[in-house]
Length: 173
Image 1 (cartoon, one colour):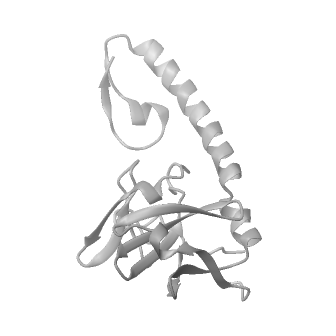
Image 2 (spheres, rainbow, N blue to C red):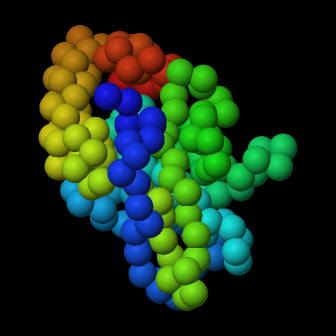
């Protein structure tokens, strides 16, 4: 079952008063067991995405920098700087990455998002489940890094390549 496909069971969910969401800021919210990010991009311009970075499974997108790329409203992940379109969820830097997005509206002075049932999102994005997977991944990375550093002793190493996470970062040890 694809989380990006409509379930037919979506409904408008209230996330609180307009005053709880500052302009040009992301705000994390909890829906069921899933962290989502509400972005008040402009006075009357709203976006909602998953809060989990697809690359590291860390819950940080609400903390990302807002901006635009050729007129496309975007958020930059604070961990790897991947830029995601707030309207489509597509990664502007890496077509293999995508985040979920959800329609938003104001109902009077209340902020609402059009979401599938919480259980549907929890099956894919539940904070606790993904946090535990991230800890397991970090433990593996930490073990690999410890082994590489133990052998390096004064060499210049490419840490990201050595531990298998992909990006190049040279570190003197």
